[in-house]
Amino acid sequence: MATLEVAGLAKSFGGVAAVRGVSFAVGPGELLALIGPNGAGKSTCFNMLNGQLRPDAGTVRLHGRDITGLAPRRIWRLGVGRTFQITATFGSMTVRENVQMALLSHGRRLGGLWRPVAGQEAGTAEALLARLGMAEQAGRPCGILAYGDLKRVELAIALANAPALLLMDEPTAGMAPGERTALMALVAGIARERGIAVLFTEHDMDVVFGHADRVLVLDRGALLAEGAPEAVRADPRVRAVYLGSGATQGGH
Image 1 (tube, one colour):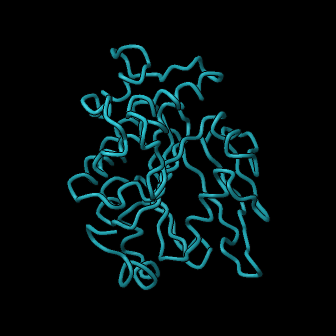
Image 2: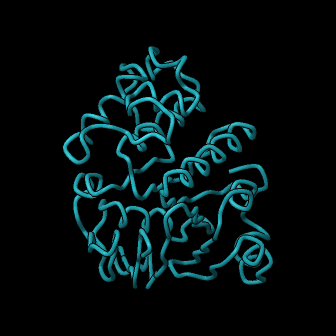
Image 3: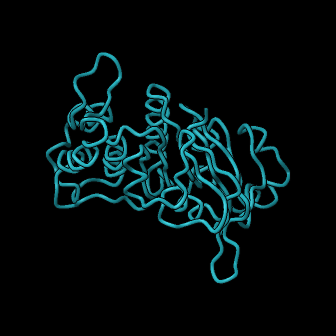
């Protein structure tokens, strides 16, 4: 069974269709990229999956359970983590405290433990930060961290929920090229180790074609193309509306 199944998702604002009949699925351990030009409907689609917007039509299912229109906090408790284009952390709190807050929030569902891979210590903030290469930063306030480190903290917060599904909105925005590659390689490794389904939006085509298992392309709210990265890259429709003019190589 797919982790996430989306069928006929639609949303309009003031008579303008932002998302039109979008359907797709993503399975355990799979990285699925959602790309398209600005205004294609990517953020609206993400916000419907996460419960921040209620769809006008369509369904969202997590492990077969209908979660369409549930509040974000309920979707979080069902096992959906999310990172944002602009990082969302508590700047006055330390890295460790930010992750501990997420672990406490998660505590009711699975006993408050992040489930590490075999051979690692118990699921504490320290164990999770070590996995993400942030152990030395644990005692520093988030407000003084470099942006690339903040992205890792936000990922740690999302993973503290032991998610079955991870939604990542432009996870490498604002990062240097080397940081982008390292972060997505880390995400891919953890997703495959833990069987986490990952859906991410991204404007850096090196990141998309270097790490995605499959690619979805939105244009004017509708699904234009879907498939393996190389097939999507070669699709003349995709090149006409996005890759040939609006996307960047190594940029965002």
